[in-house]
Image (cartoon, rainbow, N blue to C red; front, side, top):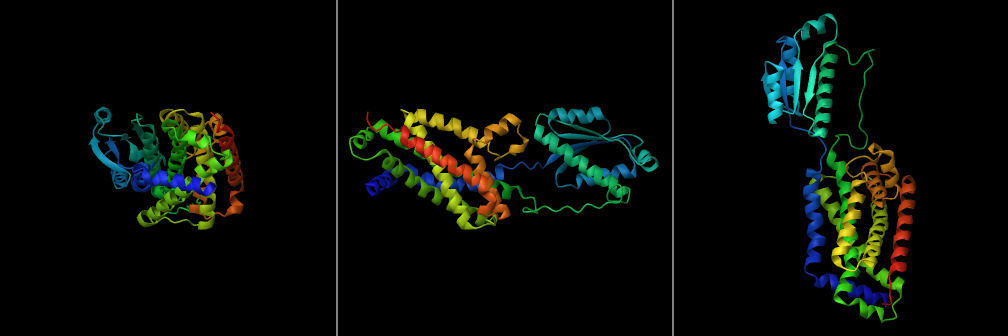
Length: 363
């Protein structure tokens, strides 16, 4: 009986002209476009410099800032008020004012003050830009004092697992999780409710097919679709971005299969409680937004308020994003992922049991 139900599901997918195209083109376009768009690195910051000192040291500082890959020198101004006008017009993001006596204070006293004023309408750009600018000024001060840092201690930075600090290596594994969540969550959510709308569910209800068999037949096709989507994403990540998993592919696909059962089971739960496709779509979209925004996809969970961190404990997407980044970047094995695996298995058992129990066969 299970074999024929699965065959029915695949025939339904194949006859739908939209679904096969969605399964192929959606992950392809998302993996090509989003890693470039979903980038929190801040570059091309327009800076206006007010150099009131007109000294050799202040000129060298301005040259050092303009030579940075992060800053574009938008203007030199004679006064702070003139520079402020460029900030108001949007022609500059940050103002650096070098006061009179800058060189004298630096030579005689060993320290000098500068003013950094940032347009904080875009808080991220203002914060990151100010930090970059402060770092450049700090490096310049160290150069002038002919020592690496105070006390003569030399700091040698080493970035493990992502030496080039390439943001795409951080985002691509997480975007794969988002792909699986959207496709393998939305499609099952629309499956049962679409049969309710067209009336074919009534034919299943009068057969001796059990609840468990029916739900399992709904899950298996999307489990296989999840493998197809994931494989497409892995190939694109390798070909376009040169990113490959540092860990075992067996670990990668094994844990992905568990996660697909989690989101597919959740989708079927939504479908069981929905009467129309529109209702299922809105409910699923609501939960997807919460899952994505509170998963650590774009911002670290540790940076969230304490109450938000507690909520993320109940977010299965969070655990799989941790798994993907650890397998992709660190090469972690199953032994290092025990907490995440236990959490995903718990979610898979919960949602799929709920899907079986909530499916009302007799109507």
